[in-house]
Image 1 (cartoon, rainbow, N blue to C red):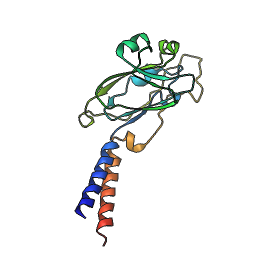
Image 2: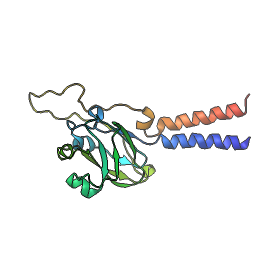
Image 3: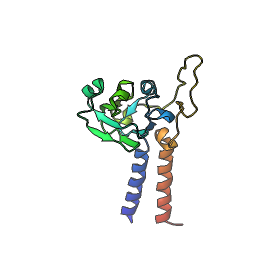
Image 4: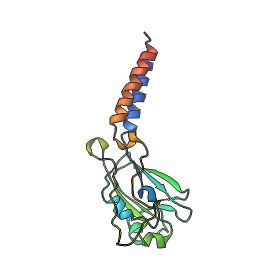
Length: 183
């Protein structure tokens, strides 16, 4: 019986820690696309170990993780990883720099590439939820409604950095205690 209480507590704690990460939809609702200003999208973001990058793209694109040299020259001849599914989730598992480019060199040269600097331990790095800023538009230009940079809320637990997930973990723990020791 005490083992079950310990397992329940550890599961709740694991859930709380896992939900302390943020999920970033790369390019917001515009996605991984040549029309998206990826540099602008990333400029106000702080990425931490445990965060997720969600890349959404059409079949005309791909996603390659490359070295710093490959990133600078849009060279995809020696990639670290290639993704072609259109929906790719990348877990940021260690601190340091990560480099992503479109597999189409012309798209990469046109700006479809992303450099992410991942901060170390999440517990020590205060990170806010990703926020979108209105992108300046030239006078007289319009942007289709499906191509905007408004944030997509993927999960409040992910974006809130753990406050709600800690409450959920506590509720789960209390529920498991009530299940084990009914009145």
